[in-house]
Each structure stands twice: as structure tokens, then as C-alpha cells.
Amino acid sequence: MQTRALDIIRGNWRNGFTIPTSKLYPFQWLWDSGFVAMGNGIYNLPQAIEEIDKMFSGQWANGMVPHILFHSEKESTYFPNFDFWNSNVNPGAPLFPKSSGITQPPVFGFVLKALLENHPDDESLKEFTKKIFPKIKAFHKFLYTYRDHNREGLFHIFHPWESGRDNSPIWDNSLDRIVIDKKRLPEYTRRDTNLADASERPTTDQYNRYVYLLELGKKYRYDGKEIAKESPFLIQDSMMNAILIKSNDSLIEIASDLKLDAGQIKEWQQLSKSNYDQKFWNEDLGLYVGYDLRNDKQMLHREIGGIAPLFAQIPDQEKASRINDYLKSIAERGYYLCPSYDVDSPNFDSKRYWRGPIWPQMNWMIYKGLLHYNFADTADIVKNDLITLIHKLGFYEYFEAQKELVETLQKGYGGNNFSWTASSYIHLNSIT
Ligand code: GLC
Image (cartoon, rainbow, N blue to C red; front, side, top):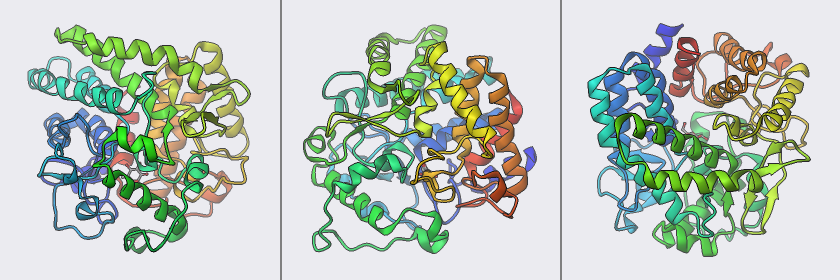
């Protein structure tokens, strides 16, 4: 199976980067690339270096790394394509590669650290680290500068796609605030529902709202400060900020090993860490939650982004224990770990994308987090559940969460031969 996983990544390799899966996602995606570089890099370090380098070839002058790079302008199976984004309305967006106008979770700090841990003596990696370090730092600086107006050390997003958890129920309330006037929305044709089962994908109503927010971004040249004034969707996401903290920690450690300058990162990190718990922890739920800046309230949901802070070692042992108990209780009730949304909510949908199913890269992060707190038993469940699902259903994009239902299925959900599924599998099977 390890060979099969490497073959999948090889098959998805294009000219210098890995697509998530053919047809459905035929370009380079930010956090997919990071996770792929990490697993693939165990065996193919030069490719992993090339992959990260390629991602940063699309970095904007303001430091933003876009969530999609359209290296090939010929592919037509994806909407919204580069012409719809028209990101060159921002003068700092490179003319080539074309890109989207939003970002995704800042994973590259911890990805780079994982590569260095696997190849501690590799000179080419050390050289690359010196080259890429300032670019990753510039990406973090973008988040602290353009997405953190209250200077809390916690950045915001203005589009659900930035979170990587596109149609999670946590965004519903904010999206419902958007009033769609069909006459003012540009005409568009979705491509995803030709390639994947519509019942597994976001709905048309949601898509209209995604397009609305994209248009809002375009109107302000994708400049975070202007968008923040108008956007009905303005959220500090617990998972993305945890990932930023994890990547900051990694950069600080890398800097101390390789004698690089981490000065500013340490300041940002201090601010982020001092505000994270107070802003995102919810004592009643016993989990972390997101924060809605439009109505100044925590968003009260149990979802995977409230568990991810374990990965960044943010909770103290007591809070981590509560999260661990929550996970154990779900496992005992007939679900694979870790469902992406609250299994007890009427909005839980074990099939529809981020509204319930299991996502491979999330299991990888949570597995690492649980190990840190010495919850080895739950960590094993998280790891073995993913491996079981892959063995049973294939290297799919995401998986059914209900054990009983899995027994009736022949395959996973979404795209097949999926790169981050293969990479998470490689990583989970290679190291602890
Ligand atoms: C979907 C996922 C997102 C991922 C992308 C490419 O949009 O929600 O997290 O990066 O597909 O795989």
C-alpha cells in the first residue's frame, strides 16, 4: 500500500507540483501542497523542495500565498478558473502564475520542520531552508498585517474557502447574512457537480454565496483591510490560527538551529498565544470554537477546527483531556474518528464534504497532537481508523464517518487517487 500511495503522488505530479486529484482539482492548492510535500518528502526530497518552491513562485508582493496557483491556463474542468478570479486587479499579484485572490492555512512552517527532521544532514535542504524561510515569514507577516486589524495576533478570513473547510456548518450563519440578488451576481457554471456526486458537494445556495464573497474581494483588489469593512463574512478561525501558531513555533526552532532571524516571529507568536485561549476556548462545549467578528461572538459549534489546536499544543493538559474525552465518546458511539462536524447536530451530514465526513490530513494533525499529550490510545484510534478506511475504501478525498454505513460502501467520497490521502498514509506509516 505504501508503494501504491507513492504511485498516486507520482501520477498526480505535474511540472514541479502535485495536483490534489485529476479533473476535480487540476491545479496547485496551498495546504494540499504542504501536506503532500511532507509525506512525499520522506522518499522524494527533491520533489518536495520543488513543490514548496513552486508554491512560493505565486507569492504576492504583500506576502500572501494564494490558495490556488493556475500553472496551466489550459485546464477547463475547474470553476472558478483564473479568469474569473482576475487576481491581477491587485498590482502585487504576479502575472504568472495566475492565482486565486484568497489564501489557505499557513502550513509551510511545520512542513519545512518535518522535512528537516526527516533529513537532518541534507545540505540541499539546508540551502533551500535559508532561501524559503524569509518567504514563509513574509506570508505570516501578511496575515498579521492585512488580516488582524485589532492587533490581537489572531487573523481573520473573509471567504470560507480560505479555511480549507469549505461548506462546514460553522459558516452557515455568516453566509445566511448575504442577500443574493441574482441580477447582480455574475453568471457562472459550476464544474464540480459534473465530476463528483452533487449530494456530496456544497449546495447551489452556498455556491452563490461563495461567488458573492469572491466578487467582494475582487471589488477591493483582494485587499484585506478594505474587504473587512464591508464583508458580511469576517471570521477568526480556530484551526487556521492554531496552524499559524504551530508554523511559527517551527520557524522559531528552525531559526535557532540554522542561525536565521526569528525576531519578529517571536513577537507575533507571543501575541497570538496570549490571546488564543481567551478568544477561542468555550468552557461549556469543552472545545475551541471560531469567532465571528461581524457580531462579536464565539460561534458555538463542535467541529474539527476546535480539536485541531491539540496539534499546536495550545491547550493545557486539562483542556486537552476534555477534548480527548470528547473524541473517545464519539468513537464509542459507532463513528470513525474524527468526524468533521458535531455528530449530534441536525446539521451533521456524514456524506457532504465538511459537514461530517472524515478528512485524512485532519486525522494526521490530530494524531500528532494527541501523541504530544500522551493520549496514545485515542491517537491510535485516529491513526488506525484512517488506515482502515483507506484499506477498505481506497485513496479517496474524504470518507464516511458512520461505521455501520461504511460496511455498505465500496468506495470513499469525492475525488479518487487523492494526493493528501496518499501523503497522510505515507506519513502515518513511516514515522510516529
Ligand atoms: C476543497 C477542500 C480544500 C482543499 C481543496 C483541494 O476545496 O475543501 O480544503 O484544499 O478542495 O483539495
